[in-house]
Length: 392
Ligand SMILES: [Zn+2]
Image 1 (tube, helix red, strand yellow):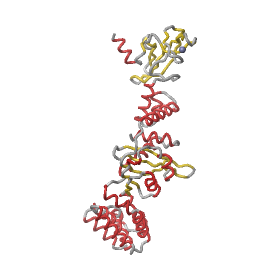
Image 2 (cartoon, rainbow, N blue to C red; image 1 turned 90 degrees about the vertical axis):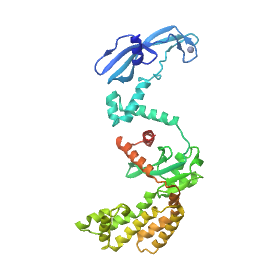
Image 3 (cartoon, helix red, strand yellow; image 1 turned 180 degrees about the horizontal axis):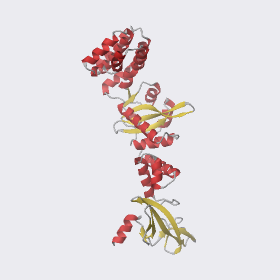
């Protein structure tokens, strides 16, 4: 009895051991056969019990304590009377024609998700790179096909670079499911057409109530045309960052002394979060450069605008800020004013919901990590599968 129980644990449930395993430190051979007395013909549903002959075949099974396990299966061939042909018996847990068990494949997929890179998986399981790739991506594809969700109520959209081809950067757009904290879908490219083509088939587009985007037209057009009930929200951090390039440019134009270094570093911090002596350092420094000082004032003004409470007050504050910007002589501020006016509605929507694209940016970071771990991807299909499984 203990022997039977042990063999049940070591082997597949249908199999029994017929020989003590031959083994070394790194591998073990188990001579096994099926317990079933009869088998079903695959061509016609007839049970047969007359054994025609036996064949020996070797199948790789999941490792036990670092030992690679080989099952040497004595497969019987049964004679089917109606078909007048022999057929090979089927062993549950091993796909037809496969040299490895399903349990082994599951173990390889687990290793792919937990090991540092796929080369280590190859070494640990002693399989080829091709086998690892095929097993992993087939399994991920199967998993994804099983769970297909309708659109959630809140989504975040952002893009990141996916690869460089012939000197051109290709982008991938990531759609984040906010309520369920996962990546909802990944699309190749970042134009409205790309998104509509790849995401158009997903059901439930009237579910989407809020969509958070950075200040980029294709995403806005995609959401406008595809989601009838969606409210578009411009991401707070992208709006705050609008003055930064001008501020940086101006700062580099000025050759500062060593004494100014600290003030220059503090320029990009929100002064709301600084101590009073740090603020004093900044203002002492800015007194020497009026144009830089004006840019800095507008940056602070934007930060202050985002601290406004309530939609109506924000609406007034934005209008007043844009009116004052019209008087400015700096070209960057004129551009900023145009952007703010163009995105006015989306910027003010932030004050209704308080939603930002922080989570989407987090998943963008994770996407970079997935890319780095594989030393980059050539196939978008594989990249999408890997990222969706990593963020599920
Ligand atoms: Zn038959």
